[in-house]
Image (cartoon, rainbow, N blue to C red; front, side):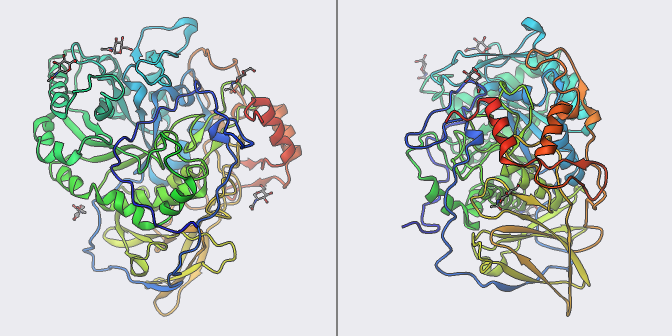
Length: 631
Ligand SMILES: *[C@@H]1O[C@H](CO)[C@@H](O)[C@H](O)[C@H]1NC(C)=O
Ligand SMILES: *[C@@H]1O[C@H](CO)[C@@H](O)[C@H](O)[C@H]1NC(C)=O
Ligand SMILES: *[C@@H]1O[C@H](CO)[C@@H](O)[C@H](O)[C@H]1NC(C)=O
Ligand SMILES: *[C@@H]1O[C@H](CO)[C@@H](O)[C@H](O)[C@H]1NC(C)=O
Ligand SMILES: *[C@@H]1O[C@H](CO)[C@@H](O)[C@H](O)[C@H]1NC(C)=O
């Protein structure tokens, strides 16, 4: 029988591999007995909702808030806290020859809520990526299916400066800041071309360079011999930083983040015993961590259903951040921001049914706010591509030249909500409320602005379609009314039908990066100094305690498709494929409109007429058109 929370928490598990999800090389592996054998990113297989806890928590409880003006809370946090880590081999999905309007729309939605997004481009593929002057056919990215190591799924990349220019062009539009990966596959000579040539291209939009990716896995990936130690790594890091100092083509010498340790080395040992921060402090701009709570590299090691039950509790997120809180304090004291540069529900593409369900949105929201509460600066959810379950969003496979619609995964809704919860001031301070007696199923966070409670995020981890496990939190406040937006889905295991404030990006192959539907905000009347906030099971309520905390208002603008920016000739796409209508030609749009099951609606802001795309017929034809469903 499945029970809740009985798994040990697999933190710091030895043998966690970095993600090797590569687009578009891996051929989908048919699962015996399963109907679906297509790309993981579109797998409709669902798990069962976790069972309700044996002891149902109180469903009606008080929340007191600290209005003293001197709250115990995190440091000031940016609304871009929860960002996206993009595997370098996927960079053409966001940039390449065109700035994808879908990508710009996603980023615009985040900027509207939490200020300019912070993204990371890097990962395993950064280690052997090579910046070249030009590529055949004017392409900006080329992949060679030659495993540089025993890991045959990791291609070697060549890219041109056009990739960085595209990132910069996106930043010019939306002020996106970037962490970019610098290879460390060799030390002598180091490979610093991306820094030498990219520095001026990226300008003020470079957050920092990540020098080396997961060095604790170098031996495992055959980048180094098996006797490679933390001390070897430290010496190499030092030698590369010395080269940076001596390099006349690099202007900024102190914009490097590390160590990017993942799973095999003890970060605490590097920091406390090996003096990592002291030794590199003058050139170090951040402390980088890369870690997933569990790995799925050996799919037989974990039962996704049982894992799901363990993820759907607050203590899971608390345990993850708990293992880093002392390290974070040490790094912050040394003036180094702490970045979880790569994570997601599980490494090696995530768990089917978990990583691509509403559960992932609940988990990511809880973990992000928990890490913010212990003074992390950023957390980046990895985008792995077609072979991954956990993508915040993913462009269609290359074969799908039309209609070229994107798929948005549940993690994207967490990113939206966290951006809105932290807002645009850059002064938000976060605290775990320990709500409901620190009950594991009903966690809550308070976000302070000017040291006064401004917003709340209340989660309900229980899955109960009957409504009997919804809870009501009675929030103590002087306000006469508060506003609430909900992130909800029918079930914990729902893969689609997720809405935030009534809006959705749609299902598989339905997104152009714009939220669709009426933007809904509920107003809750308060009385006697208390506001009753209902939180559905499952669901998340984002509560705005003051008018000034309420942003964006219902009038916010969506990013117009006219921002489509032609960059360079493309090798990947048919010319003009994205020129109009977010990559759909008018004919296809029309067909979809006809197939729609509901009337077209303007969103509340009236900036754009939404075309609600639905209907099994049209979906089937899209899928057939892409060759995604093989079964
Ligand atoms: C986080 O930073 C704030 C502000 O500096 C500090 O008051 C708080 O104690 C820190 N929290 C932790 C868990 O270190
Ligand atoms: C590092 O990567 C580059 C580019 O792929 C490659 O040419 C070089 O041989 C690699 N170095 C080592 C030591 O493997
Ligand atoms: C580590 O292994 C390499 C290759 O086998 C060898 O050349 C080197 O001397 C070894 N280093 C140490 C410290 O044992
Ligand atoms: C692309 O199409 C070819 C032939 O139509 C097929 O063999 C291949 O599996 C497709 N690739 C993807 C990623 O769907
Ligand atoms: C999800 O939405 C579709 C329409 O977009 C609807 O047909 C379906 O019944 C919904 N599923 C659930 C579980 O609500």
